[in-house]
Amino acid sequence: MVASRSLWLLLPRPLRRLPADLAGVLALVVATNVAVLTPFLRETPLRVPLGLAFVLFVPGYAFVAALFPEAGESPGSTDGDDAADGTDADSADGWTDSITSRAGIDGIERVALSFGLSIAVVPLLGLVLNFTPWGIRLGPIMLAVSGFTLGATAVATRRRWDLPETERFQVPYREWYAAGREELLEPDTRADTALNVLLVLSIVLAAGSVGYAVLVPPEGEQFSAVYLLTEDDDGELVADDYPSEFVRGESQEVIVGVDNHEGERTAYTVVVLEQDVEVIANETTLENGSTTTVNETVVRDQRELDRFGATVAANESWHYEYDLEPTMTGENQRIVWLLFPEDDVPADPSMDDTEYSVHLWVSVSESDG
Image (tube, rainbow, N blue to C red; front, side):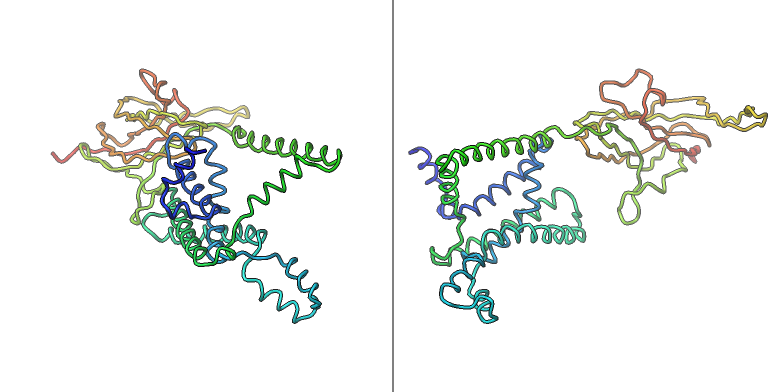
């Protein structure tokens, strides 16, 4: 007890004076940023519940705390006081007086507004980020939501400190604890005891079910993908306008993309092949006696042009700016990118060795020299 008291005194005085609920908001903001941005933690299920609370509740709660720093009474208690004084609660004047006399809001209204304002504020922050150079990405979103929440928390703290202590909003933790302890440990009858046990078992079962669903999510289809992109005039990545005309000795840029949907962090190796191919038309006779033409692609020569590695987190994409410089000349040149697990690359890789590949048809001419 003495050691914990000494550690508490080491904190700056403003932090020690911080209201308990706003201190919890700050702790949740810090914990969410650590869980989402730390490499070895962001792949764990920990970021799911923290992220949901961070997006759906915390910004709105801090905003409501800044708007309503004072304690409030529920509408029912206000009406009850009016009735005791002989005021007609159904009259227009009595109803108006009950509304205008409430300086704050009660706990249920505060929680409801917290969810509603969070759902309104976070998309607005995303809309603002969409018109900035950073765009809607994980880092800028975390920074924007954290900055808004911390700013609203600072305003809420300042406004509460400006009020007399008896008028400040406080979460009644001790009253809740005392009432819960009395209800659970000191029941009036055996029936209450049985109901309390049933309630505790229900809560444990519900928490276990939710925890299992988060920690062991259902497995979907596992696959990887490799693809090509280019950059348009606006700097956006598009699957169009690929380079097709090359001069030997000169390079052009393409963007190689890798998607990881294997359910875990995976290390890949991308092998780049250049192939001199010939397309041969073969006539095939069908069962009904008619003939059809089937094109067959024959690889006359093949060289390994390059290979590089990529480590991609689960359910993430990886892009690499690749300078393509073919060395074989001709009209029917095919550049192939093959995707393999890092430790499963054949000695002589080909398109038959992997189900993940992408190719580009190019024409390569001799240089002027």
